[in-house]
Image (cartoon, rainbow, N blue to C red; front, side, top):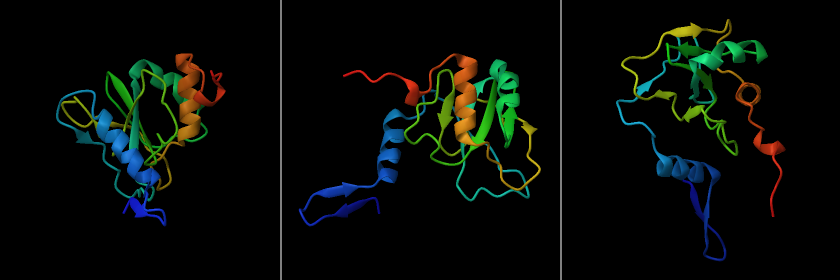
Length: 150
């Protein structure tokens, strides 16, 4: 699982393994007891579930920019948007957003309340529109639009 042999004897590492290693190296940036954002009753998360946290001041600016809003949890300091697992693959979320694998909330005394629940059974906000909305409100140029330096 994750590592396969080849005819040359070299080891081939899957992208899934690389993403897990990347997350393990960077680890959580805040100490504390991690709390997992729950999937509301009656909903399913067939693609797994991660979360993108943004400072609360950006939440109301992001909402109207999205074509679909999934589950959003909020407290006075942050809004957390549920996205499919691995939505950080080849994507650098703009600061001050924080991406957490497994929809984990760090340094919160309790799980924040659910602010928005979609009418269907999927809890996800589409990650690319969320990323673009975050770039707009933070004044960040999307990674694929930045000039490449030699």
